[in-house]
Picture 1 (tube, one colour):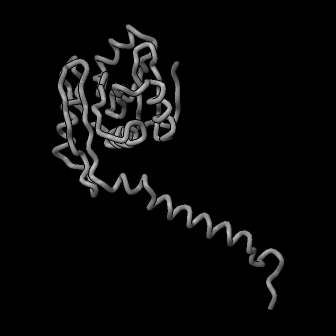
Picture 2 (tube, rainbow, N blue to C red):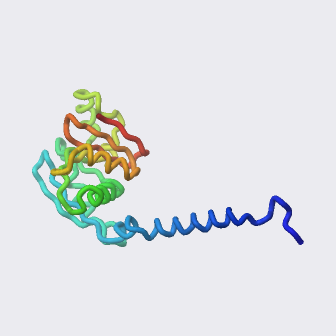
Length: 187
């Protein structure tokens, strides 16, 4: 029995679907996926405290609780000493960004990690560039620079990830990245 015209198999559609599935398989097994299955390490230097941290926060199979506690302490609100869990997605953005920009484990300079509501309110009084509901207060944002990498190059590399918010603060020489919705700003 012949197919009705609306149910007839479409060879072009089948090729498109097969190609799409092959493309998805390639993405799942491509270089970025392979990078994310390896152990992930970050090197950080806090510009306000002078502290340094080099830590493997993921072993290739899962996040490491002890390392996440170290990072939580390192990225504490340096003004108040308050700590807050850091979204591992922020760490993954830094890891991917590091591979895209320098291909090595050069230490990020951290300007701001977690911010307590008290610190955020104080900074808002001083600057119009501080959001009232900043993702820093949820441990979902970090402000960084990477020595030896032009700040605009770092910004463009972060934007290309399409993993969250990216802000360029060229006067202060840092880039903001967060795990919120994808958006960009800055000059």
